[in-house]
Length: 208
Image (cartoon, rainbow, N blue to C red; front, side, top):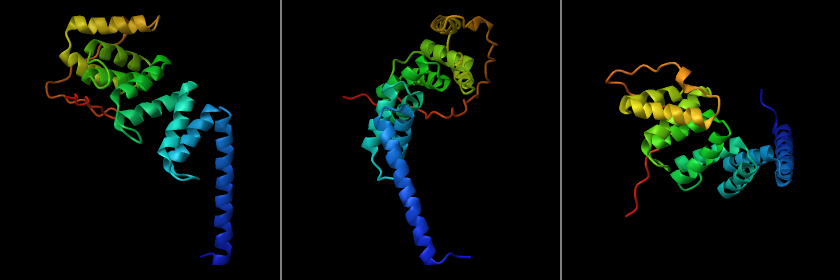
């Protein structure tokens, strides 16, 4: 059963007005410094919900929230710069935001840092540091980190693995990596599964 046009239009108008009021309220809260509202407003600008799409405005509010310590904003910025979504692709900038999240205990950010150190994308290529971040990520509950550790153990020397564990233990007092379960070596034809939810990052081309 279809509603007559005389009823549809008022409903559409009412929804539009409600959405506009909601956006205005969100913008007011964001302007007052509410980081959750700033992130929500950035999402609205990015998707064009309740307003025209505006990537610059979305970035502005994400940066404002990230500067106030919003982990959601920092992870979003890391993903944007890693993949070049709405901004120019920049591995160094991506690593900066992931690092800030990793420092506050975000296991997914730590897993992403491990992957970046494996390839040298935005950071120094360093398997020992990659192992450290992957071990911390796994200890923090990120299951994808196990695949990273398996891939690293295939190409690292035992002394490098030991150093990676030592760095992980030193990073957070009380984390005893020696008591972590042993990770079996994979078969020769092993290929790590794609790691989600973070996106794969390739080394940036060197400028001549």
